Length: 171
Image 1 (cartoon, rainbow, N blue to C red):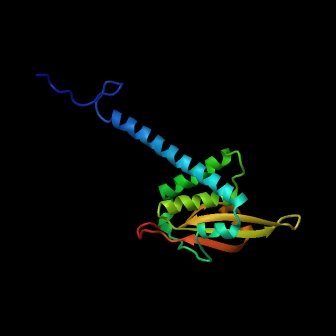
Image 2 (image 1 turned 60 degrees about the vertical axis):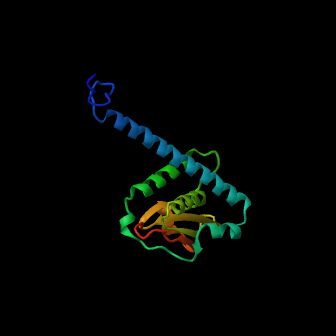
Image 3 (image 1 turned 135 degrees about the vertical axis):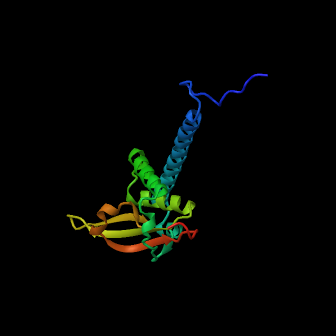
């Protein structure tokens, strides 16, 4: 009868958590790829909808009109929210179509809704230097601004769309 080894040995000849760490790294990589693919598909869907579907038909899919969610400070710094925010911004820079504020806000909203999180999309208008109306969209989940919030002070809010969180423990 042979003696059993002390566990799986890594490339360095040491037993322990080497394989677990490697598997965690692979799993994280796959998870990030899944979130990135989800963001890409939803941004493409949002762009298609923006170009070909009238806004009155698209609006019900954004949330309940003229409502707002709570500014829950527990959501600030939430890893899931930060991951969604960073992924959408990273993918938005690399798309071959325009992925500006409304496309990003819509994609983030749909990603948050899938995860049972509440959000509020703000649509605003302002005048540019040539006195032409320009529009902007930004989104918030709890107290975490997800996209487009840097310029929100310039705009007058004309509509909000929100979805309440499905679970009580999620802000």
